[in-house]
Structure formats: C-alpha cells, structure tokens
Length: 58
Ligand SMILES: [Zn+2]
Image (cartoon, rainbow, N blue to C red; front, top):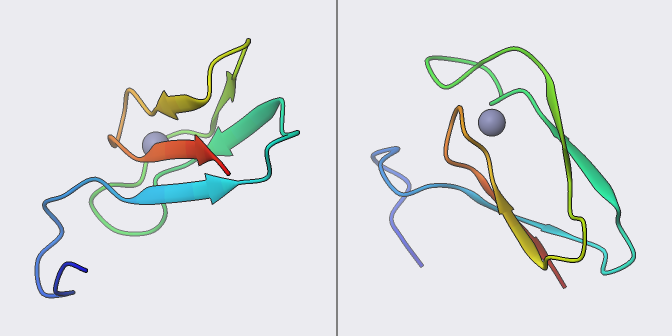
C-alpha cells in the first residue's frame, strides 16, 4: 500500500459489481471538481477525467 503522505497516485474506488453509474466530485481540496456522473456501459472500470480517480467494479 502507498504511504499516505502525498496525493500523487490516483485514488482507487471499489464499487459493487452491479453498479451502473458512479458520481465523482473529487472530494475536498485541490482535486475537487463539479459533480459528474459516469456510466460503466459494459466496462469494469472508469477513470475520472477531472481528478483521475479510478472506479473499479469488484
Ligand atoms: Zn473526479
């Protein structure tokens, strides 16, 4: 696991496998951005275009 000292590597968010959509706002701080929805659309992972956060189905 990465040390929690710097926010360089994209955060990975695990979601239930039957999830169709996720919403990302980047959280608080410099990575925050307007709320945006992503649809998995058959894929198993999505990367947020704003903050790089990665949503992965588990
Ligand atoms: Zn984001």
